[in-house]
Image: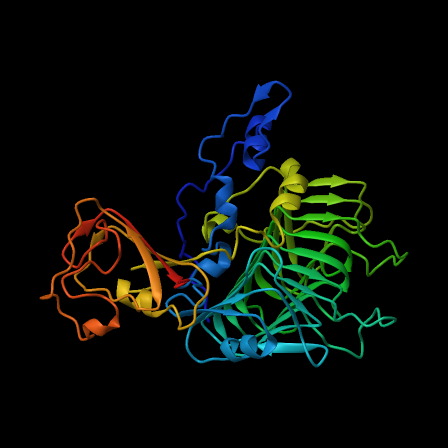
Length: 457
């Protein structure tokens, strides 16, 4: 992969925020300070944007990262099903429900290209294992999970184990978002061997030695965005970035660093090798060596808050300007502790009802309906963008469907072209959904949403 320096992904509503106290409180959704109501700052994105299913930063460039969009949606509750769908050749949106205990201990499930792996609510977890993305793997999204407990008692340095939480080897276009990592031996997240176009956002890294490493290569290729993460009770690699072409770290929170008396290897951020690193508006609380750089690397720091920090605070070189690559939301450094505590890690509202977008991820309404597998037991919403859709949509007989669209939408007629027989569950001449407001093959609709649920009676 090569990086196109002039390529930018515009994100409406994202720009420079006005760092006023009132705007800060509004961005956090905290309501008021004393008796003064907060007013939203001009151009600020709403808090809901923190749960968006679209990646930002470097993962959004050079074609972007869509994961399993366009593929079938499945829900897994055991290791075998997760491994099966994660390794499949075709795209999948894989919803993980409940706690999955890996056997044998330390199993790292291989993830193939074009996958979204997302936890349902805030209770999905991978226990005693993790994921690996092998060379060539691309277009992967992993979100809203807890990955925990491959640490081995008494083996703090993890020299003879290699149980990573998530490991990337020469992968590209990957988004790691809203994950809680805890007690992993070796690395919680390792971005290795020239992986490119990676974004790591809104995660919690907790209770670990070697936390988050980037590098393992003599080449200078990796582009990575690291934002709104919480590092607490960790020792080193928070992260450590070796030979990164571009490492953009902003709005991260480092707190409760392990106090083990190590004068060198207990540290925050490290720009190593020939890395160009930019740190913005982060918050360091009680951190030894909050940010440091090799003499061969570059590190620019601006706008961060340092509280009770000691040791190295290196800055030299010019690094790069992240806004030459993409737009991004930069929150005030003073907001970071409260904001990251609230929004990082698994969230109940992520991984809820699946929304399939037509024509964004699926070219037709029928293809979105077909993406719902037999035996589906969860709600799936099909969101249809404004436009004219000339197709007859057949909802399987085993589904109960409700639809809403334009009030003046007309129902399909028997003359609508289709290769599917009426026995699929839709009468010829009848609307494909139970509501007369269904978007039809001949109707222009400003919007429509279809919900498919399993038959319950």
